[in-house]
Length: 495
Image (cartoon, rainbow, N blue to C red):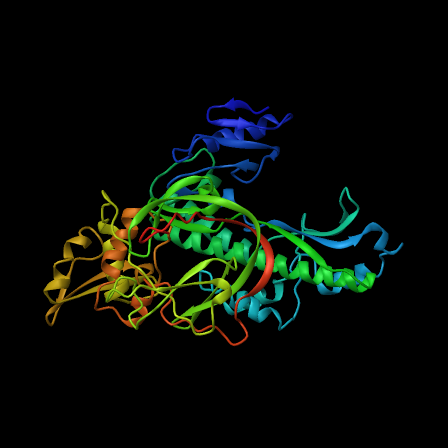
């Protein structure tokens, strides 16, 4: 049974070292801890944060608590083989695995087949060096070192499984180390003293927080994709040695859930299951809708693009999509409703409809987010680390008040005003969806003004210029646990 071992600290361990409790208690004292810190049975002292602990936070994140092997996790595939199908000696398998799944510190391979898989991941927030780009490609689909492993095993029914454990390799470590150092630098800059310097944190809504979240999510995708590739290679090698075999199901575990936008912010869909939440309708209204789990279902892989930027999404065959019925693409124009189709019915060249969200009652538009949105739409980059806001005409000048206390004082140039010294991220990237709702609404209010370019408009659309590649029509992939919105009986604008 769990027991409370310190203030806001609960342990599920039957035997735990006193130093582990002391370290976890330091984390539990941080002001942004939500609820309590939990210690698992395998908890032990780590760098700053305790290994084997669960640390819920609100409004801030501790990079060292996430760790340097971002996305570390496991994948297991059940086959249709049983123990009686295996030969007496599996010595032929080991050389194949060693050749096709390199293991060890810094180990990689030269396989052009990884290029397409990597392109689907897009890029991390941090700009990688040429050497890092090479390492990312070379280490994709490789095991690494430490406690990472590959295994062929039997379950209680004597069914054969393949199992492997891996993470985000060198690039995940480098990105994590960079952000840990940045968090420590900020603590020193703002004279914040911590019980342990490795508990340095990043505050939600800041450029540093946004940069870390984006790099972390990319590293998770890299790690998960790398595991999936190794899993396929491992099972193929096993079937080659045995002379037969097929995959029946795959379980891929990693630290991350599919995010869903609610009126109160982005939440993993698994957290929403079983409750009623405010979700966005096709008319831009926030309505309360129940969300429930539908268990394991077949998923289909769909490739989308907007302005040439591609994204891979997964959906059930019966998932409903809204297609445009006119050129503007919106869902509330000219009284033309979008056409509803399922994933299985999608065709190459289909164009998705978009919708604008109305402001929920009581929602405040944050000036800081609005200032950033203005720069994203009507600003420019002035140096590696700085951007500027450019004000032309009365409409722009009416927004000068958003920049009070931000950047350098306004300077006049030939009928326009310029505010320089702003963060370069305000122009080069969008805010994290984990930012405060008021911040996001402020950004949205100024970044999607009519004077935007086509590329700017596309950021507020489901997809601006869908171009599914030939041969990339929806296709069956492995099973996955699905949570979704329960569709109520006919009601205009239902989710």
